[in-house]
Image (cartoon, rainbow, N blue to C red):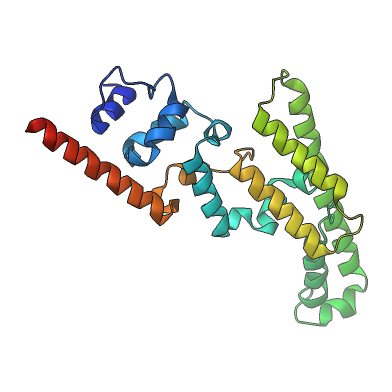
Length: 241
């Protein structure tokens, strides 16, 4: 039995049911996402994309709840490293890493606090500068590769949601103040990352662990699911009578 038929059988639906889980997976998920068990729901990972699943309200809600939990991969340091191009225009050129290099040279080099500074003079500052440049070069390399990949891809028609999202991002950028504090820059960056995650536009992140996990549903969603099963049981009982 293929996965589509297995899903229909589990839900007690006829094989000719529409929308079909095989041929119309997004429409099917809009109706039955919360009722399909974990061992079957993951099959939709191969027939749908995170971006396509954004039109499903329950999926958007799960992603939103996930971002509110402040997961490690969406925190500033990890996100800036994973998606450096979204930090473009605000890149601090590895200052955090440079500071660590400088502190190591001053406190740990040649053993013990203070000895390193005594023996190496400006070594900490020099190492810090090297680390800044290495980080800047890494980010430039990532941006070059992404630009080359975009140029190599055939042009596609963007859907309305994507166009609206990009327009909102451009409008926000055009109205943003010229000078921002470091905290404002971080907040703006994290807001963009989280919004792109919710809209299914981030790469290098596991959407499946969120989209198919019912623990990110709100309580009202679970109540609705229980009511659905209660109604199904009542309907089946009436049919038997």
